[in-house]
Image (tube, rainbow, N blue to C red; front, side):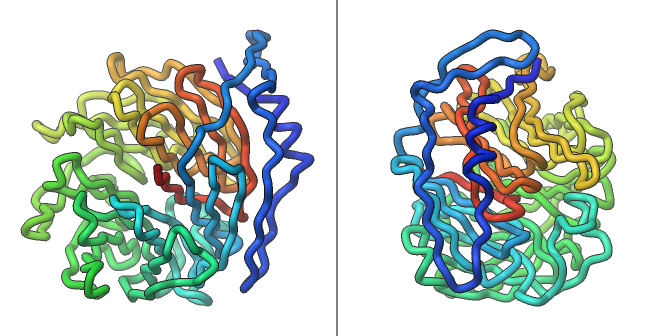
Length: 375
């Protein structure tokens, strides 16, 4: 069943899209009357009043088509959009919330990851990359640091202590390791072909990296900074997601419209789950019950859904309608809300986990791809 918030989608069309200009900050006060909004649940025709938006926290997006970063203040409803000074594809908040890390092509270094390319593939594109550090409270101040990394960087994460950052370099087939105190690259780790999404294990001991073109996942030891395993998973893996207990990793397989499930102890695929078209990012809820998968489709034939995988059965138990080109997925710390960056219409969908419905589609910058949440 597809759950669609038709009332709020109509309001979104009235609000329109943000079109940021370089060097200027744009703030918008969102008019989202969600506490009294009534929605229709797809073909079931069941009306339900949605709950209020999350009371606090911030959501950040990498707006690839407009070369901006956006910040949604969930308490006030304000959206702030600022120049990224790069073509950003991914963002990550540091564990203590003091840094916003953004990664992408250096300005003028190449086309966006989206563009005319198959989403998540980046084939045929070249460009030197940068990791850029911002104060999440003051995007208007501009970057605190520019750190050169490898060619065509895709994703950035930190270790669990927030001392180091890791950037996948798709064109180089490497992982850059950055010391955040000295703001320098301290190591480079070889991976498979076209590394893209990556996540740190819950215990912090390893990083799993999805290698798009070689159909496998690299396992990198965070102590030795060496690749210790490479696991075949299937066609075009784009992103990985751990369960909170670290027992399984879920891997999106873009061109198979499915998700591979890996037992981390045996490092073998134990299940494959069919989802929507062109799955990109995915993330588990803190209680380990669900994995949310963003289905982007292609630019020619976009998808606009999120598949919800029930971990107990490894089956899809809900399909939720979002904005066009669902790409990035972040989950609130309390597990009550899921945030989805919609690349083709430049919005963020806020999903209530309890009801599996969209509370609002919030306009941000153009080409929203990477997304991260700060309490």
